[in-house]
Amino acid sequence: KAGVTQTPRYLIKTRGQQVTLSCSPISGHRSVSWYQQTPGQGLQFLFEYFSETQRNKGNFPGRFSGRQFSNSRSEMNVSTLELGDSALYLCASSPRGDSTDTQYFGPGTRLTVL
Amino acid sequence: AQKVTQAQTEISVVEKEDVTLDCVYETRDTTYYLFWYKQPPSGELVFLIRRNSFDEQNEISGRYSWNFQKSTSSFNFTITASQVVDSAVYFCALRAGGATNKLIFGTGTLLAVQP
Image (cartoon, rainbow over all chains, first blue to last red; front, top):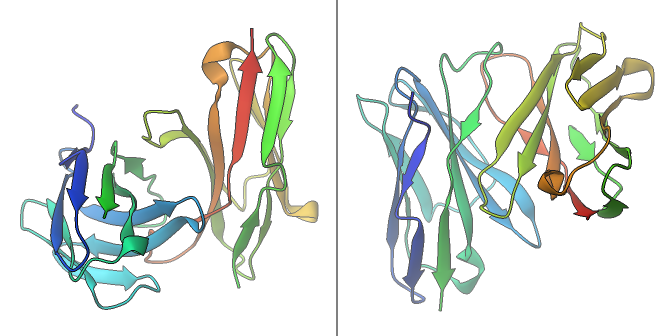
């Protein structure tokens, strides 16, 4: 099975712009979660989607949003980019989205905001 | 509140040495799950192990072993006879039970294995 794929792998934007990141989960997986990784804050949970519904959201401003499609693919959007949004954004998928699951991560999208 | 502490920021060892990475967690949940992930320089988090709170049996997988002790809220990871390819950042993570996939990560331990 192919693993979790994320596109693009690298992205450079300027302050004030918006960006959309894409995540394709492992085939058959229904749950997708997003995490932000920065040197200062470490790995932080952004949000989780299951069957096209946002089930949990981390402590991030409303500029961060996401969605999941019927084929379980997910996108996250960051509007009005700030320098502090520079980070590695990791997507993870799991089969059932329940407590017996294990999350498998993609390679990440490295976003640089200038 | 839930929290994961990895007190060791960086560890440097010489190849073939054994090394233990410490992980201490805090949770009020009676059902929870603990994980270890490896992050090589490429950035992808690679799943290593998952342990349920009701299963304190230690596990060994090749050169890797894990020691889960609820009494001390610890879930330590030992690499035996370390190799250069083990060099990476290792993360311990906690997930509560119930309908959530949210992982609480520790700050990670950078392991450098010198040849």
